[in-house]
Length: 215
Image (cartoon, rainbow, N blue to C red):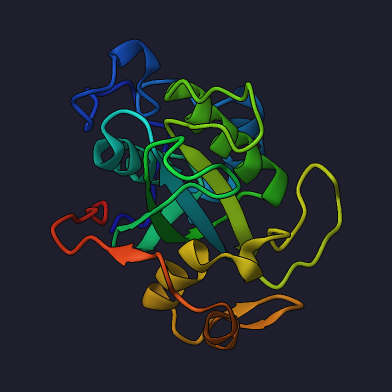
């Protein structure tokens, strides 16, 4: 794992299905993000711990998840520290069989980005993979959600921390527990206890699939 990283020039996509025009590893990091982390990224000093969930139920779901993991690692001020196994689940909040199933994973990162800039980068990754927001609970190529940022608790409507529904979603808690069995959802309690309460029914491990931890 690199200890320093400057904003990199455009490089070929690591996800072969993505058009280079829309490849998040090629798309420039938003200027506002670069400005906020440029100096800090030289040493990645005093990084914060954040947890991000990824979900996809359109297109090549595994490659899209891997592309999102790689795009996070390619972001100045972000280092991917752990990637969970892949789980397959039915869509949340919609009629049965009305959408394809989801591939879900959780990523643990260290970052010098403030929460708002991390959110901005997550939205940029979604846009790069042509995420469409036409309907609530609609199908999507990629969903990038910040589950927690350090022990921050905030009710800011733009970015509520921790994620307001993380504590009740098994498809989030199961992979989160996999990569951090001692994890806590700030203000809600231990992930292990929350998972025990909601159960893991319908969250199916895809042992035949694997996300790579970026080198």
